[in-house]
Image (tube, rainbow, N blue to C red):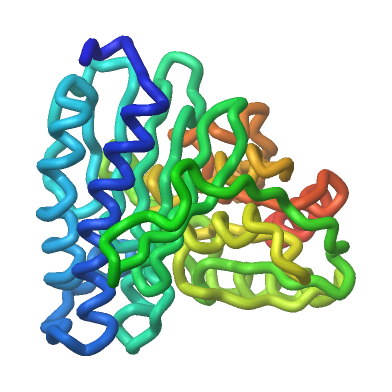
Length: 312
């Protein structure tokens, strides 16, 4: 495959194969068929286990088979694979939501996204939930879909998936998913860290969400949060990512956008400790906080509540 050429069909096929293999392994661990083992805490306070590493090991050969000429950035890999100068770059999180996974939760997801570095936007994203077999897929201007992998039959329930749309839940009386409940320092490409929200700012965010009539929840997985907003089930009005460990954490914005929702992103000016709205909400290099919602009105209210955490 040429490094300037992208096929939606290839991404759909390749991501289904890679993510389902890794997800079956993760599911077996969740169900207690294999021990989690020890874990380590990385510099940004996120955790990694042998399961993260094994999931990545299982998926990588398949991803490389389908996309040998694309750059591949993986959360648990020291170096990028493939052609790092390619226009399209793959971002892979082999186990998103390790914190919830470690305590025995069944909420982790596996994420693979393809990003256009020329237009600075996601062109295709897949997210899979190992415990249920649900697989969300979206591609630019072609909608968002959900499929299900039947582990007992080793086959997919739908040929192409079922199209999904966001709901019409208002923020008042709705739920908002937020990724972490603590302050976060984001690791930058130059090796430095940027303080996103300190603990006081994070507490203020919770207060602001409540003051807008909503309740805050978390499933400890950004991949799952975006997928659930796109899925359109009742009550859920949006989600907020405050702890971006890498672009894979926010790849799911494409699910929400293609399901008819709205997305926004904020840049934190560290010197002044102020937030600015990014013109391009898919700017993975500069986005410090990302928001997705089922409506434009809810999106604006959520962003207003976030900005107030630094700009009262």
